[in-house]
Image 1 (cartoon, rainbow, N blue to C red):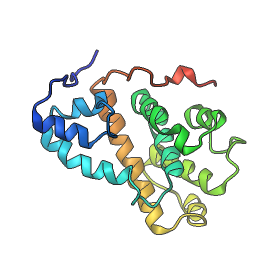
Image 2: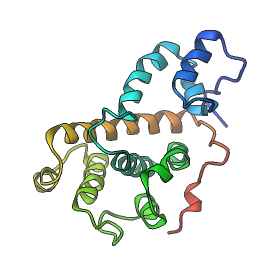
Image 3: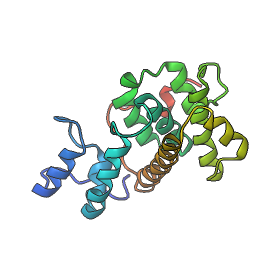
Length: 187
């Protein structure tokens, strides 16, 4: 049961406009955005940053971005946002079932991770989740494949999806219809 219920249509014109701007054309607004819309100043402020995190200006590729988001959401136990990202981005990100399983239940050492750069992304996401820091050895490894802008984007992407996970879980946002569930991914 939602602790903060998502707004339902019909929306006030300013709310409808904001929600439409946050979604692809013709796609109804997801529950998380309709929940955030209960605080419109916050929603307006965060939509610009969210647009950066999911946009083409981010220095990580779409695939890399999704690896980090899925790993972060899985580690946070945020089935809602994990499922939304699988539903909307898995195909475009080119994720395999083995990679999705690993991001959800596995480790960066799983055999599906043959790219040192992708392993480093997952390791950094795990380190930030576990300790809010990146140790010296991992820093050296990450620097071998990621430049400073990419590292900064990686750190803030992890932090952003921690915040999203916290909000979705604490508000008890209802899972999206048709979105994958943790139980859909083999262990």
